[in-house]
Amino acid sequence: MSILVVGSVALDTVKTPFGRCKDILGGSATYFSVSASFFEPNVNLVAVVGNDFPPKYVNLLKEKGIDLKGMVTKKGKTFRWEGEYGWDFSNPETIATHLNVLSRFNPAIPREYRNSEYVFLANIDPQIQKQVLNQMARPKLVACDTMNYWIENKRKALVKLLKKVDIFLLNESEAKELAGDASLVKAARAILKLGPKKIIVKKGEHGSLLFSGNSVFSTPAYLMESIFDPTGAGDTFAGGVLGYLAACKTQNQANLRRAIVYGSVMATFAVEDFSLRRLAAITRADVVRRFKEFRKLTHF
Image 1 (cartoon, rainbow, N blue to C red):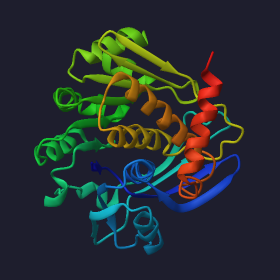
Image 2 (image 1 turned 45 degrees about the vertical axis):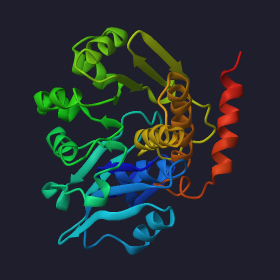
Image 3 (image 1 turned 180 degrees about the vertical axis):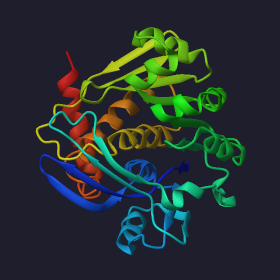
């Protein structure tokens, strides 16, 4: 099996109550691909970086076995985001966003990637997400993420895209805004009518919810002792979900629920340090160990 991810590779400057780090590795495609690589060895990444992108970060991604033929380097600066978190870690204040080369991102999917069975359309313009799908052969599963900005400014394009999506990931506020309903359950049902086969609502420290037809699955969050930087947790979660599903090769309800737990487990590692420092340092054994701890926590 193979996974294609199309999204951003960035240099982040992040401040939390525990410190500040400048120009550290970030981006939706980065977190997703590293997370997915723990389950599926064939992860193909499509993104754009500037000629200022540090070689050490390229080497980190290569060391994780991620194929970078689709990561192109353009003249200019890499996409940069700067944010600051308070003690609740829920809603970071965006200090600055510099799209740089990302503003001209028009992904051309390499020929060898077009037969990827699993596709993750990370948080980018839904029109670009649709262009990516138009270049693919016959993916077995398509998942996509979004954000409030696209819901507010590219709603028609997003709704059109959802008809081609198998798994739609978004957070609670995005779900309510897209559906125009304060009830999360009603909002999920309304979004399902737009076309996606399944919806995963990310609720941060309160876990996640899976809506699929008449089925609902709820999982709590893992009890964390230390949170240093929640940047990229959602994309890390998505990488765990799709990585596990690709490894399973079947998308029955049991495997999908287990995939969501694995996604939650991967996200816990991402938040334990700045950038991908912790996520890149763990082993598969660490993942399995925490999965078992999670299962004990929720078993009754």
